[in-house]
Image 1 (spheres, rainbow, N blue to C red):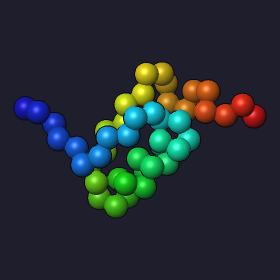
Image 2: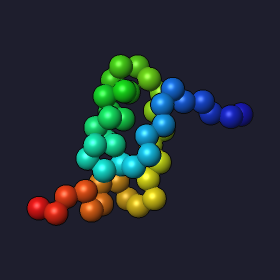
Image 3: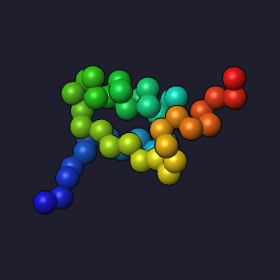
Image 4: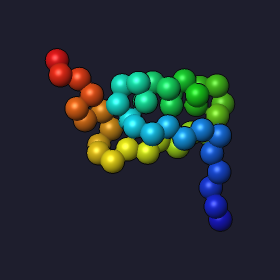
Length: 45
């Protein structure tokens, strides 16, 4: 069985996670691709 997605977001930093969340709230099936843990190094503060 091959999964299908409406959108693929590359990078799960602050912007990528926000975009993915917004798309999923609109009913799209979203895949997030991230090579590290989510939000690692997203901010220097």
